Image (tube, rainbow, N blue to C red):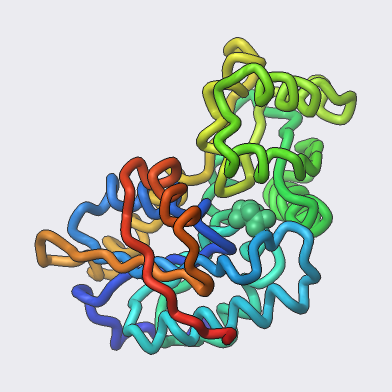
Length: 275
Ligand code: DGL
C-alpha cells in the first residue's frame, strides 16, 4: 500500500544523506536541476566507508539519519549513497512512511538503462556492499530478463578518489586494471554505481573511447528528483536557498575535500548523533 504524502509542503527542504562527503556529487547535480530547492545534507563521516559494512549496520545508520532529516522537516529524503540504497532503501521507506518521499540512486538509473536501445550487456562498478547485494542485476533483469549484467566490485577507487588521485597516472593505471578484467568484457554500457565515480568519468570515457555508454547516476537521479517533485506539485517556490551541510564527525580534511565533490568549498557542521 502506498502511504499518503499529501501533507508535504513545497517549501520544505530536500534531505540528502551519504556515508560521507561523496554524496555531494548528487547534491551538486540536484542544485543544478533545482536551483530553488533548499538542501539539508548529512554525511555519516563517523562510519565512513559504508562499502565494507554489514547490511544490518547500514540499515541502523540509515534509520537514525532519516529520523534526523524528518526532524528537520524534509519533504524528500534522497539516499545518495549507492551502498545504502542497495541495502537499506526498503527499510528507510518503511520507516519514513508518508512523512516524506524517499528516493534511492538505483531505481532511476535502472529505469534509464532498460529504456536504452541496443543494450545487451551492462557493466556495473561499485563498492563491495553494492556489488554483493546484486541489486542492479536483480532490478534490471526484473524489467528485461534478456539483459546480461556484469558486476565488479572496485573497492580501491573510493579511497583513491578521496585522496585526490584522479585524472593522473596512478588513477589511470588502477582504473584500466579494473576495467580490463574479464568480467567486464563485451559490455556495451557501464553504470558508475558509486557517489565518487562522477569524478573519474572522463578516465572511464578515455578507456572505452566512445564504444561503451557510460551512465553516471548523479545527473540521472537529479532529473528523477525534479520529476517527482513536479509531479506532486512540491517544487520550492522560494529563491536563494541556504543549504545546510552536516556530518557526524567533523574534521578539517573532510571540509577541505568538499570542494572536490561539490565544486566549491562548503562549511560543514557536526551533528554528533552517535557520540
Ligand atoms: N557512498 C558510497 C557509495 O556510493 C561510497 C563510499 C563508502 O563506501 O562509504 O557506495
